[in-house]
Length: 192
Image 1 (tube, rainbow, N blue to C red):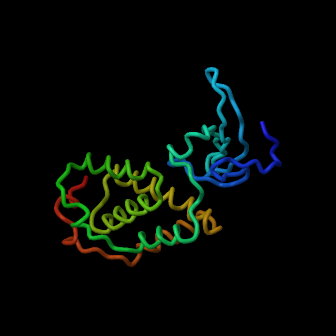
Image 2: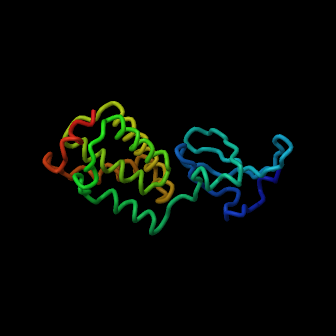
Image 3: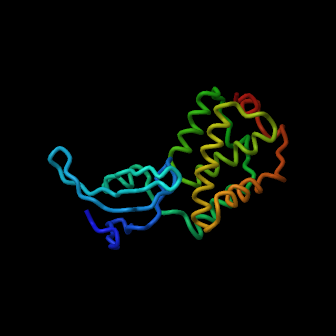
């Protein structure tokens, strides 16, 4: 095990003390990098302490990309996420195909679980706009909450603000947005 004070770097450019996003668990800080032997094979692990829950996870270095672990968004990428949140999608174009609410629910959930904040922002935006014209189902509310929490944690970290400030900023994008019911096709109205 390395000493806590060292700035040991991984091949991915990550170092001890750096904050990473581990979808869908949120933002964590690298506490250490350990080499462990499992079933006779030595592997390096990133020891990541999740900021919200204080949970400690050990992630094999060679699986970081595969499971979507990445640096906290900043700069242009964060601007792109905000641009997605503040845009009004063509809901009819995005949802032409007729699918059941369970299929649509699974698609939203799968998108959120990718951890790709641009995709999460699209789901959040679409559900926030949908909530303006109808009550969201229990499943939709859960996905909306999951997406909001992911966005809040990352925006707070990226902008150096409190979670409450990030949540207020995020919700402010939708305070004045209006979407007409005729902008949604029949399938989206009956998502419950």
